[in-house]
Image (tube, helix red, strand yellow):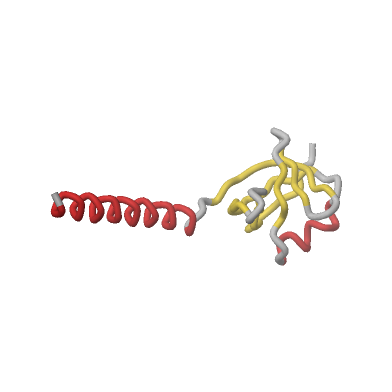
Length: 98
């Protein structure tokens, strides 16, 4: 009986560790996305589906501060902050002229 309990505890521990490792690997390497949207004041990007992204405060986002109201196409990586809001780190962008 005692041996069965130990085996169950060890099995559950391994399952939790392996699940955590998989989550950490996927969270640590976000994929690059490409989307089209409009720049709003306050460093927000709203894509064509209405999804809001806070632009990460770096060089790419600083350049876009002057593009408020413009439609742009961006390439970047999307993460979630502690509040569950989407944050995009912009790697490349271009202004869309219609």
